[in-house]
Amino acid sequence: MTIPIRMKTHYIEIAKTARYYVLGKPSKKIKNVWFLCHGYSQLAERFLTQFESLDDGENLLVAPEGLHRLYLEGMSGKVGASWMTREDRNNDIIDYVKYLDQVYEEVMLDPLIENVNINVLGFSQGTATVCRWMTMGKSSATRIFLWAGAVPDDLNFEKDVSKLNKLKPVILLGRQDEYITEDDLKKHLVFLEKVNMNYDLIMYEGMHRIDPSTLQELAELTY
Image 1 (spheres, one colour):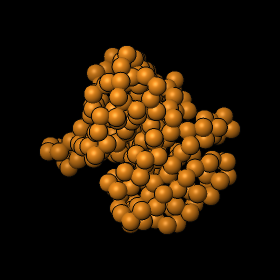
Image 2: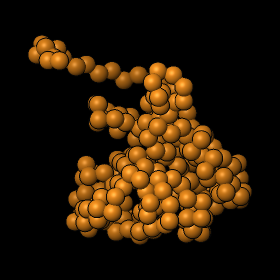
Image 3: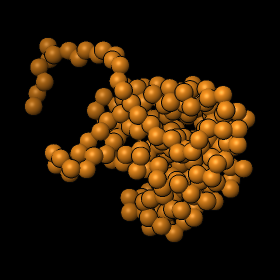
């Protein structure tokens, strides 16, 4: 359909209610705060259950939910969430970066949370989300973990690659991931070398999901 040339797009900023989930209780015993960003079509509550093994009194786990919800099949039934689509993507990115900054500020203002490591983990679509958040937002972290997803190529790498490198990035990928081929991985690693990104790569036997044993390896890296 051809859009009439006289049609003009207008934008307004609105207040929106967003939600996030927390596993663990703030206390002086907390050593690590984890911000966990889910993948496309997931909900934060269900995503967070995959990290229950880290709920040991020393980890506080925070899972924000993407601002867009959708039915997964047809017009009813199971619901998932998304961080963005290609439609009006720049505004969606700006919105979720602001949102994640607000979640971060609310969590970290708790007087019981002090002298902790801050770990940011993105899974699948969430990997691009956390990369943009850490380079465009006001929040800071100790480490960043990119699980089963790519570093977005729309970052200003001249300015932003140093920000990511300071977070000692770890890229994680299952050898049987059904969405990422070996050729995809090779091309992405060539791209990361070209933009001078430093990272550790962890390959494990598994598919496009959070692998429990690999998650435990990550937990050991954060102490």
